[in-house]
Image (cartoon, rainbow, N blue to C red; front, side, top):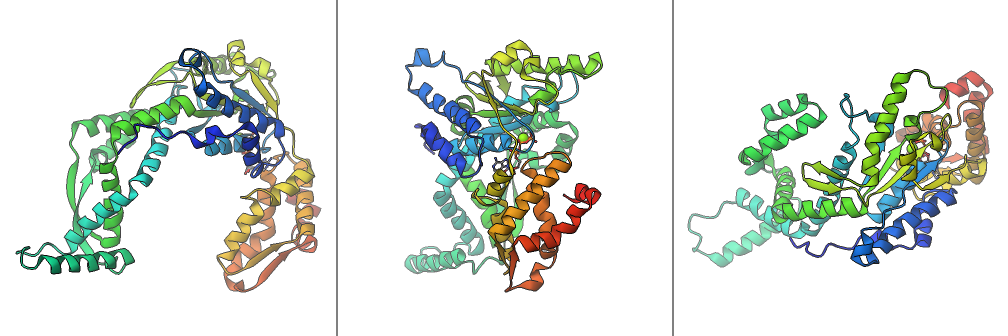
Length: 455
Ligand SMILES: Nc1ncnc2c1ncn2[C@@H]1O[C@H](COP(=O)(O)OP(=O)(O)OP(=O)(O)O)[C@@H](O)[C@H]1O
Ligand SMILES: [Mg+2]
């Protein structure tokens, strides 16, 4: 497998304007935040064009997204990473504990990002060796199905023709249910005893132990009786693995993590030493976590099981509501590492209306697609959409404002009955207009306690 010329990261070449346009397909409003992340992405590409000595001096401009819950902070970061096809890790700052305490250490960010990067690169490579792997796997399945005749020279041409016919049958699925015996590779980590050890060893210990044993014990082949269909799946994986150069995969994955990686640190406000929080203990440990995160954001070299990984050029996007604390409650060094601050506003009723219909993955499209599988057409009318946005806005006002997340509960409540018996309504159309919304949700909205509970 050749990856000497790492493919240029496609998304990185998008101009800020193009990035914002692409994000517009999924996220309504929040233009300031979209612009900020678009610039951050472009700056990486710009940096790659700069002469090497200066290039290494340019560090990414990390961003803090500030805004209430459910207004698109995580969604923007996630879409950005997908757009850039960059390794993307989302962590919650509250999951970290200071070094020396039980819990996740801050450096796990780097290890996890590398794992994600490996997964990403592996998928790309697997796609590129798919054809070769398929041929090799087919060959092995055919061998298992029809072992070579005792005297292969008897009639070579005829044997070849037969083989071709069989390959055709195999591809068309005619042989899927036949049972054959194949040799599959079993990695050490799959051996039962070792898995048990791994499982009991805690998150980190487990992985390391498995690695250790995996390196010590050679892969073993084991004979298994499986259907042709299962055999193809198993062997495809194995053959793809054979075609991929693991060392190059890891090198490329580390390069991508270092150069293109995006780490999204959610709930950063919860580790700020805010006002109104009592007790010295948690205060101190929150600051400790900030101090542990700091070097990673500043740029350090972390040891992972795949080798050393530099964090200097990873992009960090932090997010938080900052209700009780403010950015200035973070330790100054950390504040300095997040020079770009963007506020995301609460969503208006009009925003919610647009969120219901405009994004490519909008909830109304999702529900319509789900119902279509049952042969039911779900027809959202404009007046129904308006009413749903109004209900969501009112519910957000009554209890906690959870932003667009409210739309999920509102739609669930609206479509509960249909979801339950859609199978019995095959061939019908279910219209959601204002009257239907009132019929279903009116009684709930009339009862404050009920609406608080259901919506
Ligand atoms: N502006 C928006 N446009 C489209 N969809 C949105 C928008 N804001 C939120 N959503 C949708 O609402 C859900 C929650 O959004 P998201 O996870 O981004 O919230 P958040 O701002 O990160 O909140 P939290 O602070 O609770 O983490 C997602 O399904 C997302 O698609
Ligand atoms: Mg979030």
